[in-house]
Image (cartoon, rainbow, N blue to C red; front, side):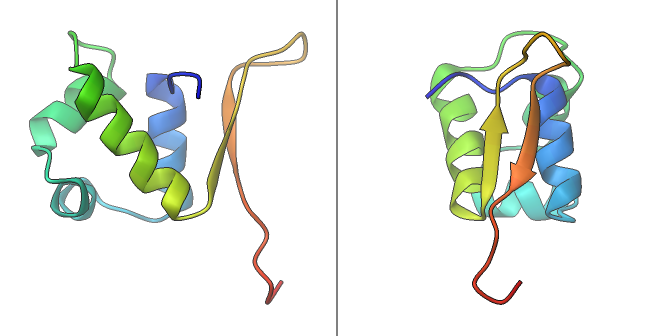
Length: 82
């Protein structure tokens, strides 16, 4: 599993319509930790980063690496309903 980027974290949270408060509650991380990572301001422990990414992936986020076309991004897994 490649480490998610701050941009991917912001995109994943937006795609899932999660507020900072909601994501903090689900992950057990502080809003400050999440904000600091999303803004690329300072180091975040690897375990915290893994926890964030795991929560996003459990909710259907797929992390796509950067390529010759563009930046690293995310997409949502298709559901059986759609």
